[in-house]
Image (cartoon, rainbow, N blue to C red; front, side):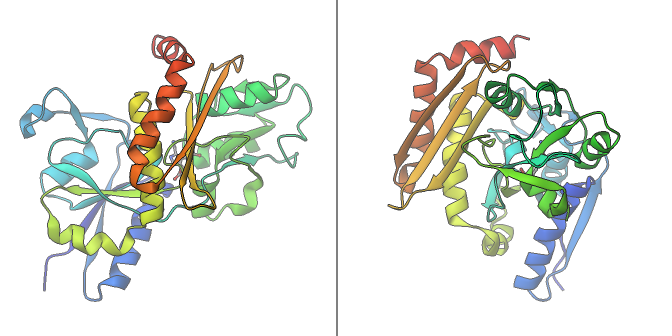
Length: 309
Ligand SMILES: NCc1[nH]cc(CCC(=O)O)c1CC(=O)O
């Protein structure tokens, strides 16, 4: 019997769901293949004290899941694409991108049906500058309050009455079987999502071609092309998910990629928007050109101010 394929995963409910989804799909596609989960308790955004110089890189730090991939204790790591940094440690790469779930932001409230229905002065919870700047631009009469924690923690804070409404990713709620919590899927034109939102990606050792081959059944080309354009925009703007940058690519009726991007002042006083279309084969160039359009409008100053805080 061949040795099992091991998935390194964080132990939050959403991370576990995604790892189990990949495990189940692999087991179904490859009868007889054993797939095991290796849970890692520490938080994903905690950097380990393992300088990349040890594994051949320079000055970067790898996260715990990636350490497990590099030292061979696991074979793959499953990520929400919107949380995946642009650069990978040497020796690791993104193997496949799975089919995207609903990319929208969700309006969640125990008292109101939609963003539009919120009375003036309502308190809305989010910790995302991207959501905050778009919210404030449309509804300067609302009070946006910081909200942190995983999906469950955020919902608990809502239920305790600390907020009138909160904004979460629709995809996370659907995966956690909390669709009934969604009062409104906010149209992407109203709250432009984060690059990669709703898509799951799989990281593995770059030289592990047999695992990559097994993963191919999970690869979704159209999603990968869309996310490639979005990530190219983020990379050009040096953005992660801690910045007021939104971008979203979809296919238009002509079959081309249509990418919309946005950079906003967190207080909502200024929102820069740009968009363009290109064939999917030019996804990368499309992301760069929309980013450069935003930079030409002054995105650099907004981002420099945010990074400087
Ligand atoms: N930053 C946290 C995070 N990373 C991915 C998701 C949701 C699922 C997804 O986008 O795939 C969430 C929660 C949220 O933003 O509400």
